[in-house]
Length: 286
Image (tube, rainbow, N blue to C red):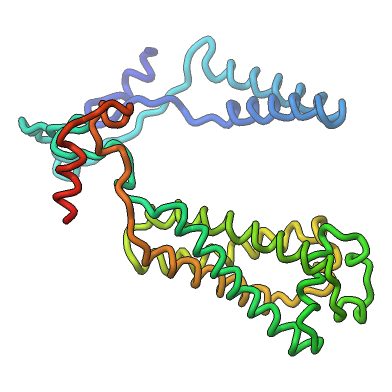
């Protein structure tokens, strides 16, 4: 350290490197240099110039002598007090010890409840959609034909009169697609709902999830189903999604949960006979 620095330094200050913007300039130049590989060579040229200039400035701040500054310390009475080390330690349970759970949740809804909830929720959603068809177009088949437009080019380019009329092929395709998606989403609900800590959280999960799903559909519907995207009523669509979420969530939430195998001993999970264990569990449930 030079004599000038030694004179400035005392017990009430601390020596720190002097702030410098050159590392940031260097990093930005390297980023532009790499970006130019997939955009334009001019971007790489600018990045190379910035990177070299930043590197030169960075080296000049540290060579031949590092630039430092002395930051005054706070008064002794304003400084943080030393941390008092406690002799106590935390005892960690081992997996399986004292019924310690290896994974969460310990209980789940059966997948059959997701299938049931998805089917009933799909019926509730279809009722809201058909109500919209009756009010807006005077036809129950209007929303069904719109849904079938994703798989039927004829429905995707159909006129309003054709969408109002009954079409057996469109009805079958719409029912199969709607039922399949409803079952898949219902099973997803059955898997996710046990992750939520309280009934209130489960309720809001059933309410907010359809809204998030609506946002995803809004972003992709133009590519998946242009006919539905051109004629859809978003307030009614959101209402149908919420009806599905609340109905499906209610049914799944009120089904009896089953215990996962994570609380079983290793022998039982591997399929070996574990005499007395399963009988004891059944006795505890009774």
